[in-house]
Amino acid sequence: MSEPCPGDSVTDDEMVSWAGFTPEQFLPPLARLTTQMNQDVPTGQLSRAAVAVDVDRLLNNPQRMHDQGWVSVMSLALADGEPVGYTELLVSRGVPEFVLQEDTLVLPEHRGRRLGMRLKYAKLRRLMSLPHELVGQRRWFQTYTAQSNLPMQRANGSSDSWRPTNCTSARGGSRWLADSTA
Image (cartoon, rainbow, N blue to C red; front, side, top):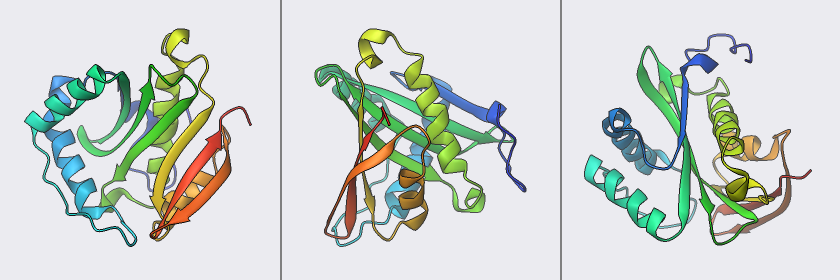
């Protein structure tokens, strides 16, 4: 277990991770966090309207993704029992080398303490605990981050577990491709 950062409000003991469908007790707070993500995410030059997310959408989307061959791996950070951040990646059963890094959000009042990075590490630990058939060949992580999102740009480029191998820029954002065997 890592030492918390000075002034940190979340310890590693307050990280919850899972693969597959979101546990029922986390659906309402995850809907709020996902809505916040849709409002806060820097989009660069992309035109994208913020979408409010409710529990029904959280229930329907994972089923659709599952039916298409994707497995969601998520981590949630809790402070005093309340969710304050999350991250998600998607693993494809059909494309054995790629993992797609999706959302990472930390509520504004909890930012600046490397909580986003700690969420990502918790999620990767959960990923590595999955059956070898699902994760054994994973080599490439792909994500998209707005160039104006400097904290996430730094997080994407500072992992000890992988190194960026290709960073392309388009419409104010960066697509990262990282080699996990680095």
